[in-house]
Picture (cartoon, rainbow, N blue to C red):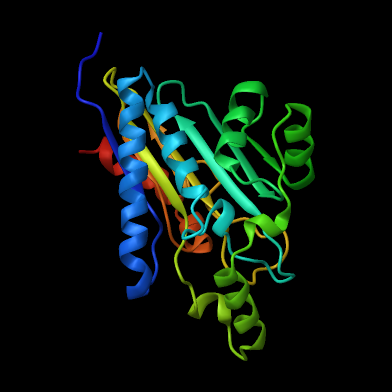
Length: 242
């Protein structure tokens, strides 16, 4: 029996949004929120809703996730994602995975079809093949914008990763009519990082956390700073304190 009005909140990442792209990005975030909310009307749970909203932004090249991801030091895409169910505290995550357009969907399969929380790199790719999850050519995940940013940073004399953040991680949190919360977060990482760099996004309690007793969080920002204080869990702790 429904006891509350459903809610969804979607974000497209922190950072500087150039005027020419700001309105377009905001429109896509709104579309993802509306699309996710409609899922409620078809019996979708909070978990279903955050997954669908995140996938929509992963499929939009305007954002640093999925097909709009930043490139690492070698000009390659490595993506991270997490999804968490506040009802059971179950979570699934993938880290530094390649050739995957929708890592949020793969993260949910990790949660539901394995006894683990996170799979990374080759292990995540092997799991994807095992469950028949589609891989895509890496080129299909690289935009001209991310390639240009990568090339500019290669030529920069100072620390380019810190000084030229364009925008970051996408994500969503939701509350369904049964009082269940969920969160999902997905990212293409920071530009020009070392191969294998993993930020806060797939780390439970840092990039995301959900608990029916208190609330749900999806973080965006520089992962190295967020992980130091396990930001998502810290926020939920403060919610618990009122």
